Length: 359
Image 1: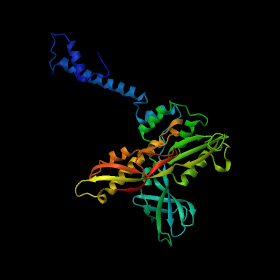
Image 2: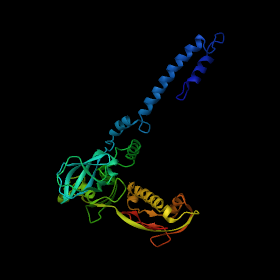
Image 3: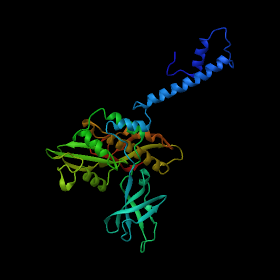
Image 4: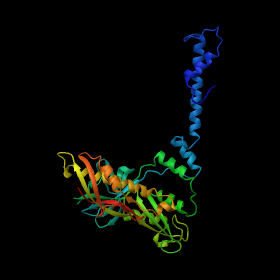
């Protein structure tokens, strides 16, 4: 009997078994060849049926059909955005002036203060966050001697990954976003350019007030520029509670950036022969930074009331286990965090940041 997982060989064998025993069914015979050709066509149709069936369900659909299915719930993939960065010049440059750095081009879009400007990367995506340094003017600018890109103000983001979008689609069934409830705030704020996560607190400053604490899409403390952008999009300060932004009318919303808690670390490392702290320091910093980024991503993924009110914990065991994988390290013990020998619990509105590390 034909099944979804039936193979070509199984189908041919089944047909041959049903043939009259007086007929020649050897490979190459007329009957065998007829069965083989027919079986190929049936298997091809079977594969088409399977493919079409997979496209009908969100857990197996390709990106185009997943987008169609998600549209039925009012969802669409987050589009790629352009990074905005802060540049410092020795003179005031014109809005629209273009510069290059590495393989990317940037355009001046706004003035912050004398000699300070906002530049937008002309290429969309995360790549716009990756370079800081000396800018080269694309067209000659009289009197320009120094031009530096010094800070990412609003991170650029790549188009939402298919599997991330698929997970967000299924998450949408867990709770309904409606009229300024917790999920509504999270969905809409997370869709804003540069935002990587948000925690929501009700009545933080009296009835009708809502506090939003955001992290940027690089899972770092956001700049004031990004905080201001989100504030304007959600509930502009000049008309708070009027329902002009995303927030419902009568919701007075205040937006803050996540805090950073410095974690000073003292390590007791047993080195391999010939190795010293100077040899491994850079790798140790990378390992610690990667761990703290994982914690920041965990902070950003909070989706429930309980998760919004839970703080992160920096664990000594996690640091030691990870550092055992660093070349030159034989053993590690008695790690001290912020002067103590216990794990460090961080406030619910904060993420860890590497402080002084002593090896």
